[in-house]
Image 1 (tube, helix red, strand yellow):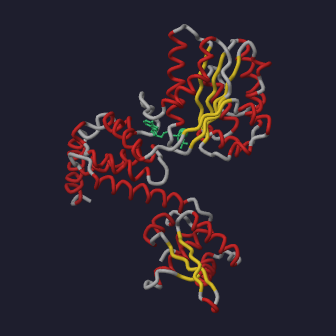
Image 2 (cartoon, rainbow, N blue to C red; image 1 turned 180 degrees about the vertical axis):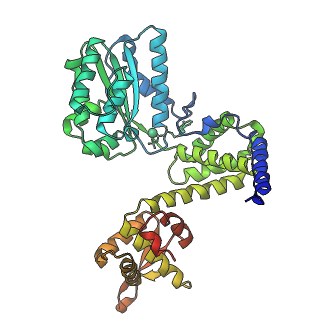
Length: 410
Ligand SMILES: Nc1ncnc2c1ncn2[C@@H]1O[C@H](COP(=O)(O)OP(=O)(O)OP(=O)(O)O)[C@@H](O)[C@H]1O
Ligand SMILES: [Mg+2]
């Protein structure tokens, strides 16, 4: 132990001195965090003014229409909506309008129907116990509070699809049909979703009430991402701390699937952190490529961690197959099944049927963890060839944390 100490201190010193040196890269780290709302949102002028037009009547005490906001992930829905409600809340306050309330709530973060409603209630100044009341009780307390105080309210429910999937649309029905119970106050609802299909899951009445107005956020082009990212970089990083080529690479890499600004901003932040950790003076393209690898690895680890147990075993069986036949790095689905049964036996679990395992292989394929290709042998028939896209090294790291699977790792 004693022998190790000087070495540890040396390491710490070098980490700290690198950190001190690297600190000059970021001037405002927050500006690259996911919940940061920039003052200026390029390429969203139309959407911002549409939202503002829908909500502006609240400033002269008229009820705004309910609004649904759609668009793929990372298209600026949350940022734009938060930007507008912050501006509206400021304008209302400057005009001494204290009865107008603007509450933002993310249904996924809140988690349950009860918490979602309790978070909305808290946002208008009504205290609700953490648990213990029925949802209907919270609702009627909230309505009574809004009526007594004549509150004119805009509720933003972000990731609204999460609420509907987990608890149905009862709460949305109650919220959109409560005007009698809260008058002279009122309530307008803005729902945000990146799932274009979710509207179909709403009952007809909720669907028509909630989508009185609709606004769609299109994906960004790679060129637009480049402008957005350059603005964010200039807010977050010191002028000489990054190469424009690195920013352009972040934009190009994030624009290749669909124009996702979150992915672009995350990539830039992680690249910056890597450069800082290395003690580099400047963020360059190499840091961006390392950051991309890290993001992809994290995504794979997360996918592996959350697989059901039999899918984990099927994946391990595919990895065994891929590594035992190095020349082809593939294995027939029959071999994978044999290996899978062998592994199940080791764990004491009953093996699933070939059909079920074939279904699991399709799911793993969808997740990008294996590729399954049908190979035709003419009159000798067809077989599915399975290639694992995950190395044993990566799988072992994640599966070590699973008590049952741990024993199957070579
Ligand atoms: N036009 C823009 N200008 C600057 N930054 C932007 C712009 N659009 C999005 N961003 C940034 O990109 C990130 C993702 O945006 P946002 O969270 O608003 O996406 P979203 O559409 O709500 O995605 P999701 O559906 O996944 O919730 C945020 O960091 C946001 O600040
Ligand atoms: Mg969002």
